[in-house]
Length: 150
Length: 334
Image 1 (cartoon, each protein chain N blue to C red):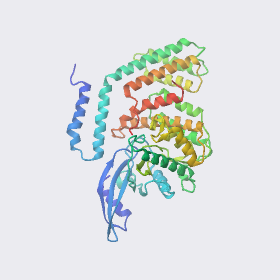
Image 2: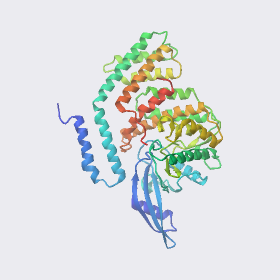
Image 3: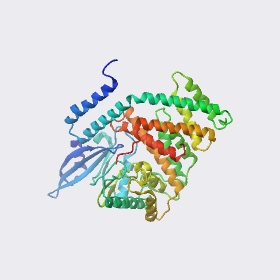
Image 4: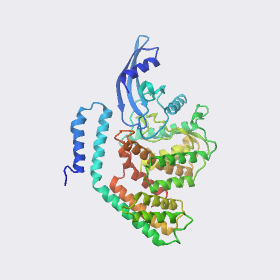
């Protein structure tokens, strides 16, 4: 393995800003910017390892959700709603190597919209809500639940 | 901002005075849609030395929002004339040659501020006074006639259906522009829901556009000045109320960290004499969460594309999970 690793580079840059740059800065604005840079590097270091796992879990979940929606059959995914085309596109996107995540998320946006507007039946809504719940949980685990500081 | 150029500029704008001196010029953090500078101006007038604390707001090279400084300056001036608690606007300079980019200068009000919810550590008496002032100022703002204030420049809506439609369409367009090819299913669903469920206002008022805790200066006697008028427009009174009472700015039961949410609405009704329309309020709270998420995406895009080097911008990503969760709950997506 080549050294330094990305994680070690990020940690080293934090130290450079903290120990070499910050003491030389006199402007409060520049000091604030340096502190923000240190914090965002800390966040980057913390998520470097978990981000690929997040991406993999997201793709796996999207693929599984679309497969489940397809199993529901044409009775649920009506032509009229436009969801049939979205589903076909999502299945194609998930079969690609690597999977086309953006296309899968575009299809999920169409399904989520249908649920929000009450245009999807209960079978579809159950799968979409399940995905949204898991997606939110994964996002919270990756990024936290931050609010503007008081 | 350059100290010498600023001094020269102020000499020209204040020809009756002599010996102008800009003291303690420093850039402040925050105010991400404008560069904000604090300084004191000292000058001699009639043999007397005078000092005034000032703020300079200059257009950024890039940032969260693209807004028009002339409009912001005129709104603050109108609010000041109407007696609202705002800093006194002093000079507007649209010639980019003077200080690289357009800017304006206003009085620097003194006081404390935060970025989000009203700080829980403040004494209860201060919180109560700020909460009362917060709604009193909103009531006064919503009682103003935009025509009498000379604010037709804000573009009066043609009818009472237009405010909801225009605002949701505007933020939807910004979303399409700044999502950088990504798809955010909850956000896409939110804009579709807003389009499908428009509300009709009962009147047209001046909307601050970012009326919330974190956008005022206060001390123990209450609010000193409402800040950040760059998103002001004409629209539905429920828009500012919905934005101010979003869970995002306060969490749980306290609107803006100021007051229990239902009591907040009751006090609004007492101060304005208008009832809170829950359907419209809900619409504008959904719009508020979607708008805030889009503002975050705009800042992230500006950072990625090098339009701003503000190191706060990447942090905006951390706000998205909470906004998406609030939207998912509002739209019954979970």
